[in-house]
Length: 178
Image (cartoon, rainbow, N blue to C red):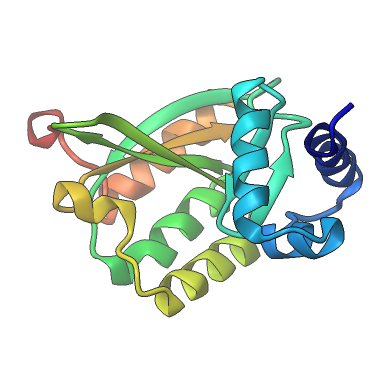
């Protein structure tokens, strides 16, 4: 087994025992390599379908996608960046978990990023990081229109989420979508 293969198995082992996302910087320190080497290792592991998700807080091993035993719905939304926290809290307050964010880009097609926002604290941490980051949110690529895949315990929860997002003006009408 090569050093790279050993390191990649070590990454899987570390992620499988982690209680929280593990940053690329932390993995780089542990394995005494650069963060870029970790990014490349994770890309190779993902290509092998090893179930690594890259979230805004770091890498996680996909033990449970959040989809098993759940109802799933994709919501098409549009709102200001300042309304992001309210949008996410609306979803989790109604029993939903925000699995990802995606946009339909005219050139590249679907661009998706895992979020894994399960509660108000996750929503607050995400929006705090968003405020500190100099990069634009993914919705900036499409003028604001974006999609969230949401998991919830029942269709009733999803209906309530849809109703609340509509009341707040975040839900896009079908004719407004790209």
